[in-house]
Amino acid sequence: MTIPLASLASCFQGLIPATLYTCSKDGVPNVALLSHVDYVDSNHVALSFQFFNKSRKNIAENPQALVRVYDPDTMQCYELELRYVRSETAGPLFESMALRIEAIASHSGLRGIFKLLAADIYEVISVAKAADEAGLHAPHLAGPLAPSRGTDALFTLRALQELSDRIHRAGDLETLLDSVLEALDSLFGFGHAMILLPDEATGRLVTIASHGYPENGVGSEVGLGEGIIGMVAEARKPIRIAGLLREMLYAHAVAERARGQGLCPEDRRIPLPGLASPESQLGIPLLAQGDLVAVLCVESRTPYRFHEEDKGYLEVLGNYLAIAIQNTQLRERSEEAEAEARGPSLPVPVAPPAAGGARSHEVTYYASEECILVDGEYLIRSLPAKILWKILREHEESGRTEFTNRELRLDKSLNLPDFKDNLESRLILLRRRLDQRCPDVRIVPAGRGRFVLEPKALLALTEKP
Image (spheres, rainbow, N blue to C red):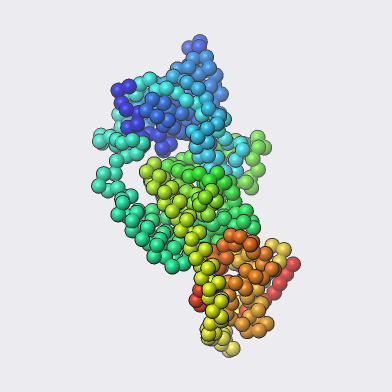
């Protein structure tokens, strides 16, 4: 092998389709495009077996193959002479390849149709530059499975220390989440990121904090198994996709064929959250003792933006952040109990809305759907909607404006779980949705475990089945 296989890291990111050449025992050649070639070790690669029945038949008869891959930085083509070794339908390699394919498929409503059948392992006999496609003149990017960043490395020990300090300085959950996302941008250059928390009641993931988007997207939801974020939550494993737009075009082409055969209904397509057309996405599950605490997703419009070391560093950060989120929630709950034991605090004065010329809003609660609309526009649903409806009704009946987290936990009508109720995160979500969609109604923290309702408009409350 004249060229080290590990030096072709950028060729294995899936940005440019690879080409697989096989030949039957009778000498009849076949050419097929591959969406991805996976690096296994210094002497082996893996090819995904999905639709290429002719190629598979040829390999069964003649286990020799040639793959042409491209360096997206230089457009240099490399030829890998291969010999088939085995097929894997289980294990870490298969699961990693299948997870990436399933994440792409779910965006186009092809989950369960567009899937990996096997990971075919090939020994690499030789690697050579293709003389007919020399590409651009540029120094080759070397390194074990990642281009070298040299002195421009995004991740440094100093940057990680700064992020750790920010986590320790965060006094509450809201500050913690915002600080981490801001640090991912300022320290590491990840300008578009979001954190989603699981909602046990709905079985979905809800965006609680985001950074870098025109609208913060707080309150948007992703189901388990939907897209990269949903797949990360379901599998509890990280997913990194370097050339998402090309993969999506490939998936949509397969989707059209599947729909033509009646295998995939039109309404199954799931829109991408965040950027409208991301080229790279990296999703990391935030796990603490095996429990899914949250999902962190970073994305970019730049192909091949996230590398293996990015994934490794964010996995370490994710475990640390998951513990920090849990500890913050436990600390806030403990401090709430201490504040409650000290007795009620002084009431916080709230100016009533002006009687003449004041704005007004129609607030409608749909009990069967646990959903609130303001002036006919969707605001929020599930537990945050029930919390808001409770405090709005009490304010209407008695003029009350100050409330405590503890009374919410004790209110049986809200059906908060006894363990891991995530009340703090739901209040953050509620505050941010109001700021975004109905700024005339605010929920303002008023000390540990207390908050104040500040209506700046006249509210007409209506409850419907």
